[in-house]
Length: 95
Image (tube, rainbow, N blue to C red; front, side, top):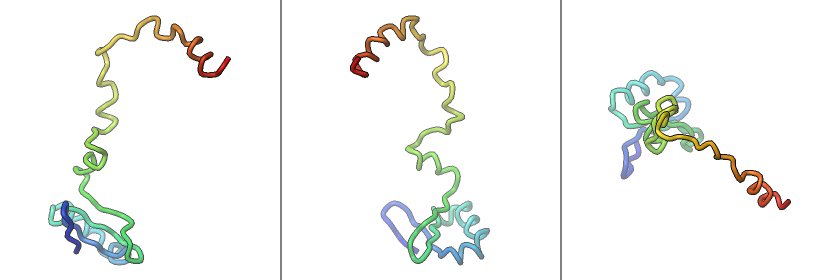
């Protein structure tokens, strides 16, 4: 077991994980372990964490299904949005 400043985690070899996957899942699910790292040749390669912590790993962002359409009706796209596009394109393309 490795103790770090942020979290306590268990490390097991891929072989141990293969034979005891159900037990490892129960440990994480019951919060007896914050996470379990699976190692190959002594190097961590996979981490088992509870699903509820996944958004934190994502910078706290909500899943895409919760974000799509959240700004609907919050702003109006102006009719002349593309006005000047030709001029911008010319300046970028050097024409």
